[in-house]
Image 1: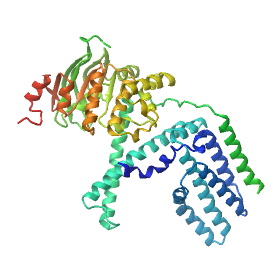
Image 2 (image 1 turned 90 degrees about the horizontal axis):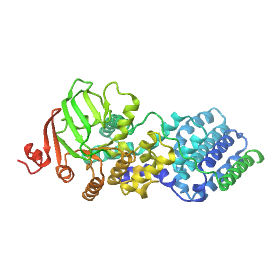
Image 3 (image 1 turned 60 degrees about the vertical axis):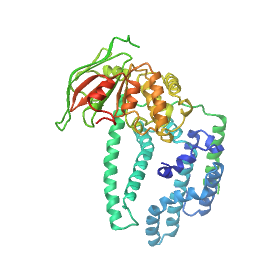
Length: 240
Length: 240
């Protein structure tokens, strides 16, 4: 059901073919870590550095041919959380810290989103494995990503079934009750589904370890991207 | 492949009780020759799926089960279970549960890799199995982007790659449209393995199997030529 996969647009973007998509996931991941470190350690008294970081990220989004407005909208999901802390800080009389809090969280999430939207998540998992991220954590990420679709489809089916019988109206109390019940059923169904998946894994001889990923060669293009990204990020962080 | 007269499955006096005390299987005797195809009929809750779950050690009851000469009982060691699971390819009713790896190729290679093959050999066997089911073109796709029929074929490839002697298919026609069912029928006809079809789809079963067993409240109430079983238990849509 296509409507059920609306939440999957980042995954769809990640299968693009722009120059940024073609760069090795490991190079992009390391560049992201350098960028996040630079953003996190930038002083609150240098607003132009934040502006430069936005320009840098903007060029990456442009290079990846990603939809700018949709990317900004998704990154803005983090704002309600950081805005609460920012508001409290502003209230305490420290406007620069409040502004920087919002800028840092927005830049960080936008950068992570740019990586996720320009890298198929299979490659991203391989890159995380290459950087020695603990295996249990990788498994959790792998299953989380995979079953977002399964649970998402389940939600879409349940919503349709509720709508077909006149449930889940426009934020009425009865709609809230229906939604609360649906969450319970969704949990039970996801639990059953998880049990089924585990049996299917055992049936094909699963012993608790996943096969190791195949490692693709690191090309000159990837080295060039990594050097350029790190150089520009560090230059912005220290030179401006 | 085993000689055609040899029993690849030999079940005697199998009893299984669910943890809540319900008796699900009450003295099952069942044998299957190499290359033979048998349909398993019966009402919902009659014990069909519980029975096939025993055939590769996912459930363990009382009684004796031998698969290709390997005995599965309470004391079966992990390597015996692994050998049994390599010989019995279990295709689940819900393909969604069987496909959990990030790409079609990785999913099909999962079982083979668990058998201890190197990642290159596992990938080669997975590609061969995908070719066998006509899905070679989907190797790099994510499993959740496939149609129901394609998912079913990939799930079958996942067990074919392990080169089993027996295929057990639980409700293989569920959610398949008529062309999908036709393709599945043609595919299964081409496969030389012994097959057990657990199904409510009488026409599909009769097109593939010469023999049927009928489950009733955890027992085998009938075992014989498929059309006479259908007639004896009034098991077709047209039966009075």
